[in-house]
Image (cartoon, rainbow, N blue to C red):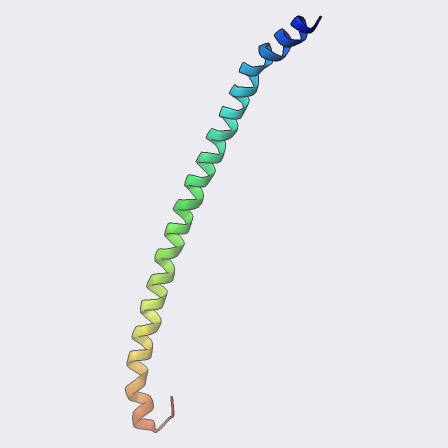
Length: 70
């Protein structure tokens, strides 16, 4: 009787492995897409930082002429 149970369990292993492989592929795809989005957002944030720095650099002389403390 136990031999039949062992055979049933061993028979299910390929199905379990293929299911796990599908999950692995889906997760890998989602991680790749998230990495792409993070990279894009990082670029946008860096550009915004440069933009704010440039504005600050342009405003400093105006504040100095007006006598505004920074």
